[in-house]
Length: 473
Image (cartoon, one colour):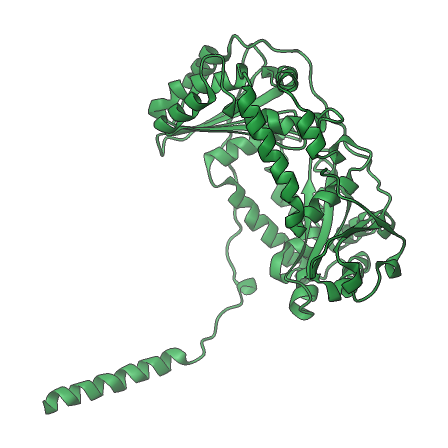
């Protein structure tokens, strides 16, 4: 018994000592001071093929898993919605799959896809539409047959169209319940005013859309020479060619290329107020920014990262959230497209801090024009951007898709391979040049959504204010 007690006492003393030792402070190396060899990035090249009907295929084989993935990009989207029938592109994409084909009902399509563990998705965006396909290798032939029917022979059944319209209209009725989504929707409308990109679906426009509208939209834009395809996984070039020849060779090309012009490069700025009876405010500022094709693209990418896209260490987050504690969400975004881009900054704050946060956003933008970055800040941003860039190519699926999209967006062939080197070359003077060129207050839209009676100062203190009404009726 005495031995047991002695052993127990010794164990307790040993355990207590171990805990105390573990509690002593350790010296950790600052991640920014770690030394490691440079990362070399050279992704494999997908093979580009062209079918007789104009279909362009990018094929990259990967036999690691018995899976095949297909991504299809179509040059169409809400930009082409007829005036008064906004929402047509979105409904066309949704009902292509659910509305059945000439040989199968929508329910039959769903049931067979589920039984074969095949996923097919159709979605529409502003300037493009996408179709995704994923199947086990054993079910690939039947999956491709169903995919070809959805793409070439959709019938857009009336009952499925009505269901899709009802779902869209219910979504529109509920938009105002989410202040952040509500504010960003109206921000996009302001940003693209006097442009088809700024015409958004409404209850009235969706209700006007009929089955014939979907059939005509599909006939106009869903043609083999208006799309590009990336096929990856456990499939060879020979198998891809055979499958597409088998199921798509009878689909004639239209011979007309779809072009989408960019919006006006310069905006007239202004302050806009969207009334919303909530205890919080949503503040969004924005303007047109450099395109991916622009020589300013790389410097502006770094500038945006420093201002707000870089997370906890970015200026907007640090000042507005960390230092001042004025926002539960704050940052910036840069959405570059091939021929134009959009830059914006945002903050979600309590109503009583609205004016202060607006002042801080203006101050941060003004400081960027005069002092865009010091060498340490610049080095952090460039390393972070280049290191994260590599992770967008972690699979053959992503690699082939990115390479396909270069051609789809008419970007230079070396855009991906030269990206990191061009980011590395960005200097402080480059940042100052693009900040002076693009961060102009007179070309910046400011949208504030909230309850003005609770603001710490009136919006008129910042300039002329225009009240707007949501356009979802």
